[in-house]
Length: 366
Ligand SMILES: Nc1nc2c(c(=O)[nH]1)N[C@H]1C(S)=C(S)[C@@H](COP(=O)(O)O)O[C@H]1N2
Ligand SMILES: [Mo]
Image (cartoon, rainbow, N blue to C red; front, side, top):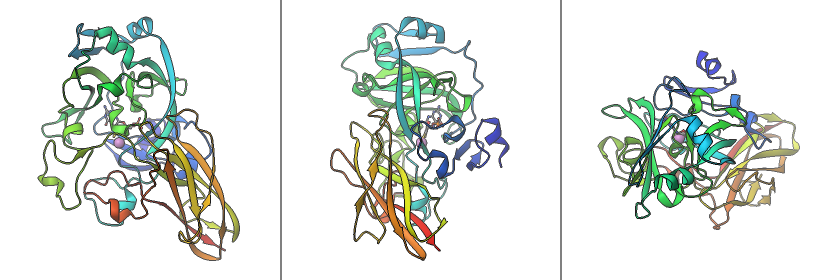
């Protein structure tokens, strides 16, 4: 067990991909069947050291293309704006990267499994209200966020940042959040205040936010302009620079198994399998198919109700496990009729983002 997992209030059985910066994901079972993920099982994705949280000293600067640049304390935000809560799933663009690494090695990136995703009820104020108060220029195109954590992954080292389109920033679901599942935000999750951008890759939900800047283009921050971008398979990421590839924003439809565990031994016969499915943007998961015969025949999983349009759906199905080694497949469809692609090789990319190929669970029937 890692000392860091305990320090950050995480389960002892987290898979720790790195201790400095701290990156960890829980076992599948920790996410199964519950809409909200307890803090101890919520994955952590960091690009630098976790800053010391000091709620009293925290200030948020709102600047750029605004009529009235402003600066807020936490108490100021609470007093001035209506408080809102939203249940939303965060999903890292690197979730399920391990499936791409099996296709071809991805040096320098952690082999995340299927649990770099989780759901919480976030509480804070609407970014839209803060932007209105500042008089954001309606002709602006993007809103940039800047954290206080300095990442050495950028050269020279840079605070973590990113941006979203202004039209998304004005949507009621986008929050400046100070609480998670009814508790004050934990230091590792961005205390005292983080951005929550439902439906977008986790990287846009900037933690330890200190600055919101309205601009006429996307952020030039390293984590917007140079990474979290989809590169063609034949490009060496060491040779790319700002603006290369396609910036990642909306989460593509995805799913994976949460129970039983991958590689589990189970009694042969009818077996209950379950998992999660999620689609970003304005899309929702509408169907999940499961196959126990390599994809010749698909049955429809039972779908749980999502807590909000921004939350994952849990699903379950009964499959037939035969004696010996067997693979169970799952694939989700979203409301735009998009389906997860079958083959991880078809979505392989040099930084290993967005592996949304069919979920595959290896079981051993006895
Ligand atoms: N300031 C800051 N914000 C950040 C990050 C970071 O390293 N620094 N990581 C991002 C990424 S890539 C993800 S997936 C989510 C993870 O949020 P969590 O650690 O609370 O689960 O935070 C995002 N916000
Ligand atoms: Mo991420």
